[in-house]
Amino acid sequence: MVLLTVDQVAARLQVSRWTVYNLIRSRELASLTIGRCRRVSEAALHDYIARQSEREID
Image 1: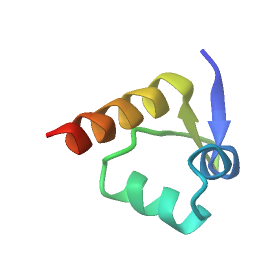
Image 2: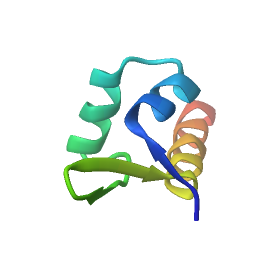
Image 3: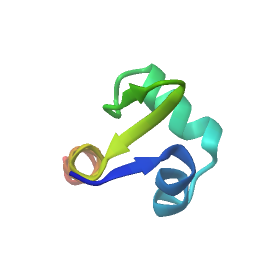
């Protein structure tokens, strides 16, 4: 399992860190905490993107 930092997720989505934290806070993007660090799995990021793509189609 590959874990990404918030900055890496923000870069991949081309959004701000604040937006990523809001997605995590709203539970739209699954994450986990390791110590004081927040991490997002690549699988969770792919799931989020897939859900957003489905919403765009509908």
